[in-house]
Image (cartoon, rainbow, N blue to C red; front, side, top):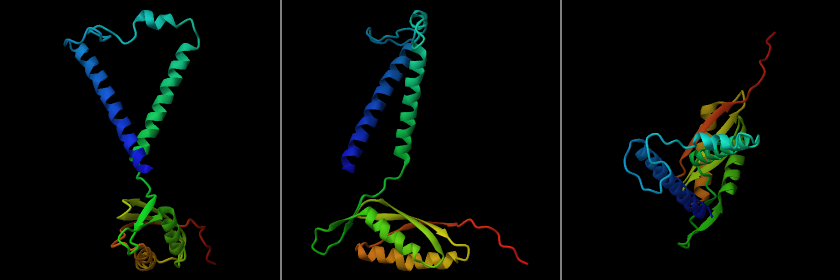
Length: 195
């Protein structure tokens, strides 16, 4: 399903880009005095998008300009949302596991994330763990965020995470490697009084 959405996204992005380039190029050509087709609405340097008559036509209707502004604001918000969705790293929905029969099996990405997070949380000094798998289903990558207790030793926790939790996940999924980006953060706690 994600492949279909990716294809639709690329087609929509390509069409939007093509429309913007054509319209922008036509407006730029007309503004610089180059010849444009006869059906093009703006044909000279002094043409404007909305003439004074067009702007005044709806002035008596109090709903017109607030509606135009609201529609444009919604379009800007949707465009920003779409842009942010493009910049986000896609979460891996499934991992290809070597089943030994040559075909492989699919493991849900969330299941592997949950097991990896549970094993990371069982480590000494780790208060909470969050795991997200990214990359391709045959070569996944892990992004791990650990919330560390005040008494924790980060180097030991990181070593055990690498040697135990990540190694178990890599071996159980039959992966040659499982690269990980680990971020550590300390739990906020109140200062203790010494008397």
